[in-house]
Length: 442
Image (cartoon, rainbow, N blue to C red; front, side):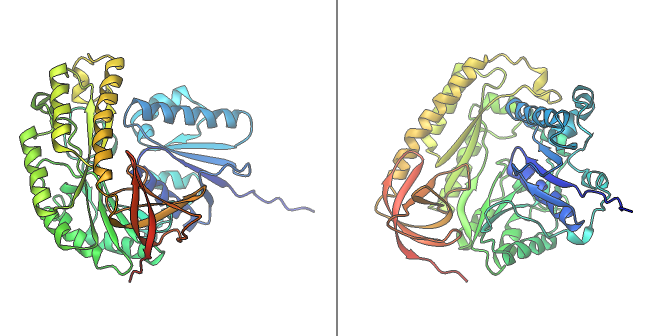
């Protein structure tokens, strides 16, 4: 007599949105693998029977991508190509009740802090002993380290606190433990992320402790670069710059989203800062760390943004000559305080203003890059595409910033290695060069 065996689930995990979502997905994978569940990240094979989608719900474009992805796999379930479909993440956190009615093909919906409930659907338990360990989906030489969850700021345009809750810092001990584990697996670059880095420590240590954390992480053997993302400018802790200036392992790179330059718009955005305050931070940063590269983001089309407001922003970008700039168009988000304002900047004008600002930055970026021609820069190589090895300097973060291209026909480097590269050519967003010395690290 034949015995009936239960087919084990094979899970395909899809990640949408930012690097913070990616870390959440890596934690999902770690817990599932720890429970002996077969799971892979964004595979295209036909042998997976369960799909878990980790969604983003930040702005309209991200929400639309999340919805389209859910519908794609809902169709796959209706066609019998998959058996089960689960949705987690920010979009699910915010709209699960409405979505449950609209897309009944989804087996269940989970919020951003409901990993144990998701695991229960697989008859699995949340294993606390796995905290500090993490399966990495990035190239093995760099990893994102999420130092806190949520945000306690009250920016009028942002729905993140509605989805992620208030800021909760992780302890330095837990972060050092996780970073040590990552270093032992080959990670050389740590990219510190959260909704707001500079708030780190205020909730659990009653004082800002980001500089202390940076110092402790730099002591970990194998870690060569520590990079800062998402540093809020209000009450910016200057000791971060002191640590950056004195610590060779901290990249001279600061991602600090200013969002606008018109004081009227900044006030309506509830940013608690003025253009003059921002200029003081930039001046101090350059004084303390002379070769610092500053990345920032701006939001155009906020309710009530006039042509004069936009011209103030353009002039600010021209004067400050930022090294890296990202531009977003305002999204009218239900539940935010700005939602009570009239979304009175037409979509076409938002697009036009975003393009204008990026064109200004394109010219600045070209001139900044041209200054590197003839110099030698330390480069960490991420991948090979076609005939070129592609890497980054300490002034560039993965996916969002400039890259350095080296001709693979003339030079050979291993992915994950550092090399000294003499820059021979510059374009608006990339550099090209020749390998001079392959670097060694401790």
